[in-house]
Each structure stands twice: as structure tokens, then as C-alpha cells.
Image (cartoon, rainbow, N blue to C red; front, side, top):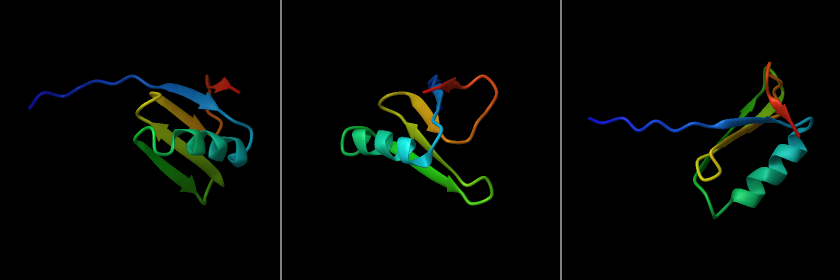
Length: 65
């Protein structure tokens, strides 16, 4: 079984509302997966069309929007 490698860019957003706006922009256009963390109170989108991970969970080295 061949495995395909896909690279993603990580984008950090200060609020969950900003992440929601990005989710809505991709709805119906791209395949995406969305997760909410109750522990961190953060929202994360993985968009396979944009090849981006967008999150309100701050990580070292994330590109802030």
C-alpha cells in the first residue's frame, strides 16, 4: 500500500470566531476536519483543500493571523 505524503501549513488565530470564519469559507469547497478541545477551549480546522491547519491553540512557531 502506497502512502501519500501531504504537507500542511499551520496558522494561529487569536479567537475561535476567526477559525469559524475560515471553516465557513471552506465549507462545500474542500474536505475538512474540525475539532474542539474542551480542555484547551480551542478550535482547530484541518483543511485538505487549502492544505492548512488553522487553530486557536497557540503552538511554538505558528504563523499568527
